[in-house]
Image (cartoon, rainbow, N blue to C red; front, top):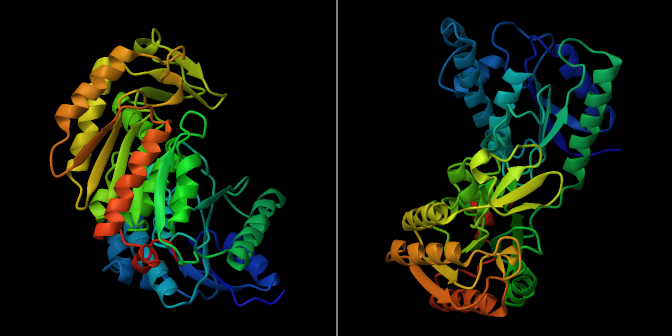
Length: 424
């Protein structure tokens, strides 16, 4: 099949030349074009490459000799990672690549993660790695739409097992480059967070109402990775406005759970100057990975096993107060309008009367702390309703309508796209 799609192949052509050339052969055999980038340090590649290791070092403001003279493999690879990421973006901006794929162990993966971050959402990014899906890779190193493939049997040299992984990876990245549907850019986008659709159900009413107003709605699942993706897009200016109504990842972070989105949760939109309507959905819960033992201090709390992957316990009154202060502090950093909606009758479906997380004293403590913590210019509206009630949705839409009317929220279709956040 003929194609005009070009895939950038990144790797150490001094140590993994056979594997990288095999990957290149598989892509070209399917009709794709390739560019090759050598990020090796110590040796010369076998055969020619499109971007040399000397060019990579130079892009980072150094030379290969200078990199080698540091005598530290960690520093050396970080320099090469910086140069590789800059060149990857430069090649994309020049219209010379449509996708990237990188190959490596821990060193190559570390570098590849930076290259993936350099490309906008929607540009296919594949990393074939011996440590794919490993806890060695923290969530904040992953770009929003990166794809990872475990490189089984690929530590040294070609064999039938690793060829299976590499040939599939070649087909995946070229197929993605051919098939990707880029953002249309015909409507402004509102970014929304939720936790499933039963624990929090407001999106069922809000999505059609927002679409009727001319917006596109992107809803992110606030289970750690979803919040991370939300923050990355928001921080790149990819939304006209956010409705950040599910904040369990922030409570999880403060309580020490691994189900969090890193230290920048509830900061991306504010730093980027994106207007934000916020609500404290699910801040009463702390989530744990299904394989984790519940820490001793949480074992006397209400408990809910959602499935084999995730389970939840409840925060006590003091922990809820701490979360309230964290929410107010982060909103105070915002460089654009920020409005908190406080639904005083409940924050998620399981805290209703008769449900396992019902705790009126804990909710009252949170509401009390929130009232004192939020300061101007951040605005706050109390709604005498549950977050899943119609009154909550009506309050959110009323705020948005006012912001559209006074120009706080733009309805220009290219708000996110013009900042390079959504459109490749």
